[in-house]
Length: 137
Length: 134
Image 1 (cartoon, rainbow over the protein chains, first blue to last red):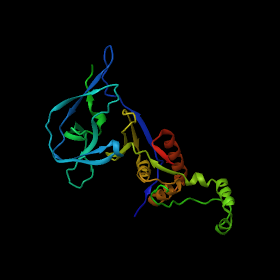
Image 2: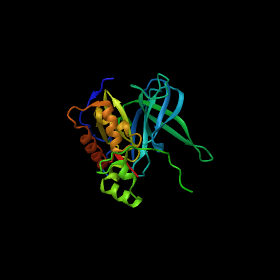
Image 3: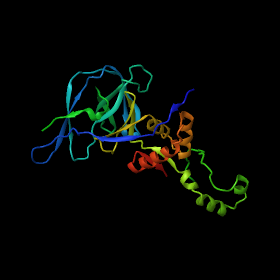
């Protein structure tokens, strides 16, 4: 097999403008994100950031509701964004391939006995969750 | 009882002046002193990719997307050889193992590969993209 030609390994960081909610005055209490449920139907997975980004199955019957959901997140309370990186497994090989990546919004519920469960999941065509825009004040 | 950990063997270079027979004849204390003097511990260090970054390839270019507690408004682009090293570092590796893997995959006519890998790892440890494994 032919070898590739070595070139200097590089990583470059770049910062981009955060989708921030900026209040004209007073304390910011919440930020509203516009999550568009527009990824085509298929088997949906997300990467669990609380578990080494392990791939987790969400369901094989995901379909887009094609609405823009206004997702309100408390600011300053330390609450995590409810969005995750994920993919829709269109070719059913149980791993992510090109053009399968989506941002995932999970609506979590809590059972009476305290167990967390997925009430609903939505998927947005996006390279990452950083593309989800927030409303400006 | 001791804590179980995954059994592993890592190859490190030997650049000291003694040959293997001479090293085998050293006492434990002499061996420790010899290895310490010849930078053995440094070469034995293991590194791995910071698992809080998600590595993606977009239009042929690698991108590290921060997750977890990392700042969300910074992304890191990675060129081809950087991506190769990142993929190698999904499992802990010594610098020597990284160099060996890169030499197997790449032609290095200008003999820059070793120095550039050392520099890359040192710089990325400072910026937190690569961890030294304890």
